[in-house]
Image 1 (tube, helix red, strand yellow):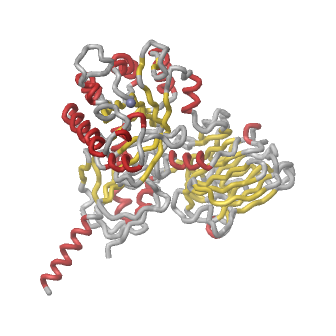
Image 2 (tube, protein in one colour):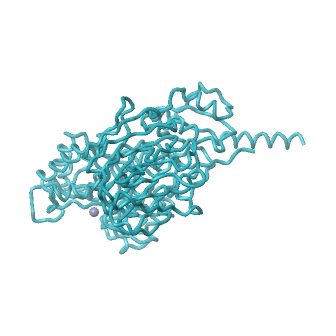
Image 3 (cartoon, protein in one colour):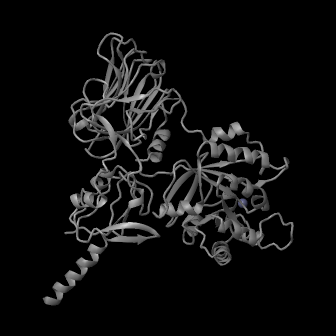
Length: 560
Ligand SMILES: [Zn+2]
């Protein structure tokens, strides 16, 4: 009996250890929002740019602390003649539903409420939720966390241009209580895909970066007789555009690291890929990119890199190593650049394994990505590739996306793949990268100080924080206080850990049911959480790995 008890003890110890949580201190508290105490709001003076549409999208992040019945989330609405444009509010139990009122004449309004059973609104308090409403002249659609939830038909064919101010966190005189962030409004009805992307790309979203654009280049040379050649002048213009528009280059290696939880994704990330490893990448592209601090990724064809003649047209290993040593990522594009599907399985496996071996030997780093030559692949070969590489890049199934197959070949994800060729004008280039246009208001609520928040849509409709509205980072306590208040602590909180060269606090706890969101929410910051073992994925999360963004509805099994 005694032995058995000891065994139980040992097993328990092992399980408990598996619940070590790593909180990445560095990434906490970098973002702000606005906190409304239940009587406050952000108000924006009336302006013609705020209404009069026949199409619109209102996209908002909210975190309710307490339900104020029918509280406004956003509204340009006063219940007086000529005062009514639009109002979106919390409705039904705990704000489970979203209610919309729109008026075409400022006097009468149509009122619509999402189905209570579908729960398209705020389901739980203290959880960031993205609420989106679209309107396009005959219907209203309700989205929750980027997912279409319900719709209603309306006979209101356009929205009245009222004199009422725009109110965030209000709209009627019933005030929202909790956090608000990233209010972005469009004078068009965004598609389902666009709204899903807004969710993914938000600071609060699950899959930050899932639709990072991937620009694919080949040669940067002065010649116009080949589609895949981009001139140095063109390339210079494009890099300058990226720089001026605050894009941040990441490499395919960074991307793989991010999926593994060891790389922090910057905002406006973009990947520049130079297929095949042509020498003009080294001689021409790299010096231009250096001016802007940009890095690229090169899928190398190992046989081409081993050519010994001086003018092979391909980079040699010295040049490749120089890129590698300067923050570029070197990936595999096979040994011979063959059409993979024409190779038998063992020959294909050789392309995968031997190119990986050569690259590892030459650069001292194991490549994480295999880019199928010509992007030609099928399910079986993508699966086989997954045995050798973390990411296997195949033909994009939808334009412009870049699908890849990842180990263990159970999922396809998409990045936006964009081929840059010799007839790509700067206008084309800008259009490829342009996100959803026709914003009529955008309040990112990043100031963190003062009594106004700017509108970055171009309309410059300043938001004024009224009494009861304050900057929100609730980060007054230390991390250890916050943890101690929410968790039953086993270990010494002063203990720090080192994980993947980043400093982490380590907390051991047996009380991590329901608590994890609170911890992170209290900081209102993006925090990486690494769970050593057990996890349950929320059903709307489709990236496998162990990176969790801050407001994920993570549930962890409690140790019993
Ligand atoms: Zn190629």
